[in-house]
Image (tube, rainbow, N blue to C red; front, side, top):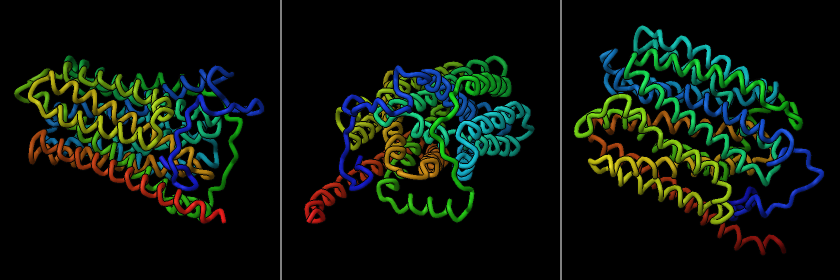
Length: 426
């Protein structure tokens, strides 16, 4: 992707950066780095496990409440929508009270709500609880990336954020696999209760392991200051492109994984709930692609990485159109790999680009990202109802086309800036 100043392409690998021996921030192999990485990995696990705890269970939720796929999909969309709405205010609180404090409080509230979710008496009550849970989780994503940008050396930032995103993929995968098998035996309510208990354990371990911040500078909670910071970020063309890319990638991912359970439980597959839940083991591919995003950027640059991620996702969508698991499963693997690689590259680019108000810059990315998730979940379900799986795939292909178009526009802006640079020098 372009650099913060000109929009020119950057392909700075971790190996090409020169370490500053006076830099007290954490680096791979240094004091506290492993504890920090594992703590944020667990936070990522808890966040995605809770956020998408009902996604693999939507057919069972529909049957229990006699609700349509579109209505049941709101149990996912409400959670991601709540996160999208509250991520910016929560990021402001993290500027004032600290990243670790806000992340800890967010996890505490989210896991508490998670223990009430299994007792929802109606689909409306379930949607309301999920919205509150999503709003609570809003303190995690932006605060985590801001914490990393402040506490980790720049040359290790993409890798560190990739590990956090990898935790997201493990949380999403384990939550869906566990709920699938538990629900098959004891129902969806016991399944989401089990995820709530796992999230409690992750939250406790996170708080015990995460090192205290050493480079945090307390900011202001004044609305005028926050509004000025947000306005500055939205006036940055590069940041706006990154926000759009994150939203579009997540539209694909949210739509595919909201609908896939319905497709696989229907003919010609007719799979049991436990097997459908196990399909989400392909998230392990996302763990690998996210954690290796730094090396990919080092080889082909940020824009090249986004093109590869978009192409991989497109290939997966087209492959998934087949009516055989031998085609659908590899398709899901490619979709997952492309999405997590693109997300890791885009989110780390936001942290590198923002020169001030990093929490707000990350919050705006997360807000766009989860708006994309909510839109993808709802539109994917509507498209599935109207045109079957082909309709959902069509929606995904349009979103990937948007990613490629935004990235091409960034390439054009970089060339224009490069041509003008010599004139500015004189």
